[in-house]
Length: 414
Picture 1 (cartoon, helix red, strand yellow):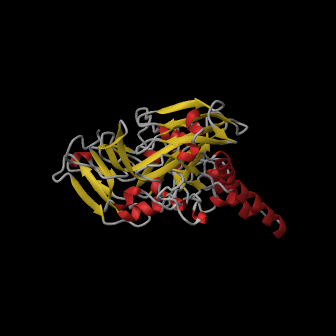
Picture 2: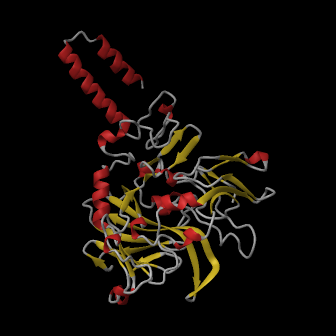
């Protein structure tokens, strides 16, 4: 900071011609932009204590920390131009095969949120459940909830994560209608998260959202494992030349890694099977690849098609309606793209049950940036697996918020 102040004073005192002074201002401004977009550089005397990879912000509005960051076309400030992220995401976007009798089709977050309320659950409170906000609009409000035990302080909807859902925010559907998902494929949005990886290349995550997860045991639907709100994904890991190395598939508990070459593909597009009801992702099998007409086939790239089995009841009569919702760049948790601020919400994307058999298993689960799949301690592997060290270390400090890219900010006991 002292160095930049010296530059400014020096420029003011320079007795040069108007033309030279103008050129000097351009040069100093360029240096300032470079400093601004280097996440290892602090922004104030207080922020000068930041460790490499950390971001500190004075802005009270998350998502608008750096007014000039669009000048370098890297809105999420991860070191990758937005145009490159979009190009790679389109090139390797998967083809997803849904079962013809899938009970819960994909949907868009913007359709889901207006059908939800924000609540808080605390097993130490009476009653255990408290409504925070009535029916939401397009965003999830930021809220600090006092603990029933005074010594436990405040719980933050943008950072607190309770591993066993004992103290957590949650979204509750106000009706069962949205559970089916959207019958209009134009609402089947694929959200992608692209970042520099530890291979010197890029990792692209493709996330799908479902309003409901139907439990299925031995082919039969069951309430066990059924819950509101379901995020599923695959990761494609690229090398320095942006060629695929491996693909990772999110299961119910862990991520499985498969070498790229043997996987079923159409060109560069991986063929992915979404399991009926539960939506976990796995490679499409060879025998399944021989009968793809029996599945709902979704091309996940922008302008991609959705093909339905013959005589499927949800098949649109107008062929122009058989296009998918395309690809939307989420950005990073500490720097989401416009309209993607929901990624910072750390609570459950479904009702937190408090009664009946095994209520925790029938409760909602977390979104991409706090996802439970493959967690290592508090490290969110499903969001940050293989991420570059600088980005892993990144922290956002804004008014009322301290947010870490790869970890919860606070853990609610259990």
